[in-house]
Image (cartoon, rainbow, N blue to C red; front, side, top):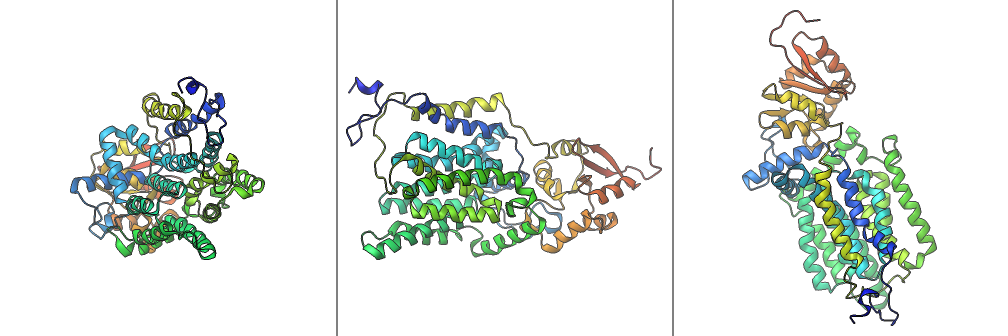
Length: 498
């Protein structure tokens, strides 16, 4: 077959040879590399990754999850949930090896790995490369606003692998053997395996109804994995308490007004809603045009996750990954149960190998050409200035800034608040709101935390900033271009310099 190798893809079962991919095939093959390039060019904006990395460093140093609170000044030594402990440790290890640049590449590959895993499964089951590329682009557009270095990237990877297992239709024993450890690993990386319960439960329910109707094939793998996913929810150091921890985190997140926990239609999520709406409308048009190509379980999962995304934006990543097989199936032209495998051989320089090479080149070159950038909303300049003061004690910072403060200054520094919503009870968050709104005076803040310094945003915390500016006991030593200010105690109380 040496002659046709340069001009044919493979000879499918129909006997009709496939032509070698043209420029559009190569363009489709470069889509994964383009996705990676977009992620690597984005700045790091998530404030919580900083305290997670510091927790990861402590986990690596002690060889076990951290069980006692090390950061919050008023809670030192209290029991600490081990939420996401494996993600924190692994990400901290990657940063220790290659700094932020390596961590950025690693995180991006995990985040995209979920999309790529299910896309590869679709390709192996007969979807065309153009359909898969289009599916990746549409799904990526919907979810990319959420992308930053964070443990949720592991959730994308694990969810995509799970959907790939569902899509590949392997033998039940193989699917179960691969699925069970995946589910346990997932929950210890990111506490979202409940999404797997939803996906597997829908599949088991649909296939179970079909079995009751025709008694042809019992859905053994979906049924077993559904039970395994329920068990995996508690297969962490937190055990059954994960339910209370997750409930408290959701409650406090809503109380604080975190936009990713709120519906798409609130003003703070309008910009995020636009790409979701675009992908949903395009997908709906494809469904109406090719409705017989969809598998019922995949469609129901996508609809359920879309509803969850509409109610809480944080589910958009799962919805986007679940849309890949739906869109790919609709654009391929096969029926809802296509079984045609991908060809077992391909031209020497087929686009699939071009995709691998392109992704590798982007991962190697782009971090050198475009080093890690941090969003201007992160108070890194203010923290660097504060570190030069050689202070020890509690740094009173606006709660979004607690993570960067922890990463830069622990153990010399403690924090009053940070982004772990489950760490602080409702009354403490109400107290924080009272400070921000001027109901709690500076003297009470000092009496409660005895802060060594203040690091706040002057508009967000205007009453507190005003009192600090008027105080003879505190002096402002830094003001950043974004309005972040740093106050430290005056060395001597005396007449204020004008």
